[in-house]
Amino acid sequence: MDHSKFAALKNDVQEIIDLIAKKQTKEANNKLVEVSDLLDELHDFSEEDEDLLEISRYQVLLNHLYQKIHLAREE
Image (cartoon, rainbow, N blue to C red; front, side, top):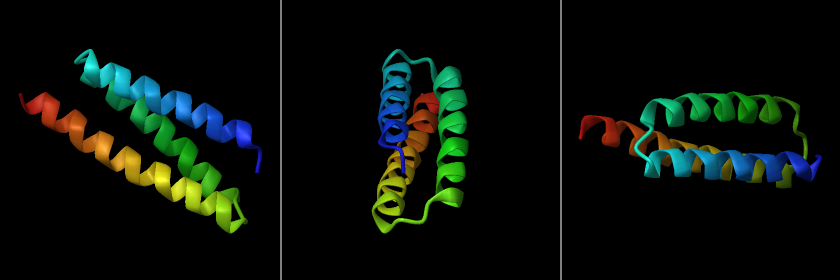
């Protein structure tokens, strides 16, 4: 798989983290949904175990960020 996709994912995840830090939860959630859709697409077309492992790491990270966003909304 093209590793520039993972570099782009890393940047997108950092953007989500930055938005959470700025308490912009709506924008963070929108970006998270966008990145989640991209991960689903990458998963559908990946065949190498290494790529699937990297994708699963991002999925776990996005799940944690999702929880952070929704906890921040409750505050």
